[in-house]
Length: 192
Image (cartoon, one colour):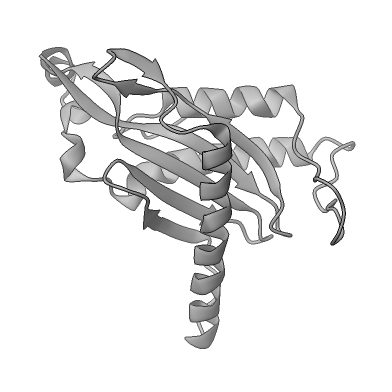
């Protein structure tokens, strides 16, 4: 018997000028085809990441009105549908990291998962706690800090209004780190 557990469908990094810096899309399990394929196109995920900017801004305004400083933790931004949910984290420099989770994205043999400790056998219907994604954001932030240590990377570069396109992260090492994070996370993982 197999069961579906949450997996990462997309990881994105948005610059402090609301410019998309990076997007990684990961395949999800499709039970009807019994295969793995992305649940949305890269363009659809790009639009989804752009929609999270509004949520980040609303929470920042709410926190400012309440006199609460920016904590860095944001958590669940919004549930896209019954399968996808967007979680976010904002650094103290204004860089936003978004993780889109597919609640039924990974197929696991329930008996083997239960014998291995049972943490991955929890059904997707139970949902996720914000704390389960902290390792993802910690690893994403660590990868971004390593990228910032590259003297040739300009984090504040953006295209002025009316400009064409934008500059994104082209580092192979950063892309490999995002791939490792996206493929390595499962609920209950404490370190990536």
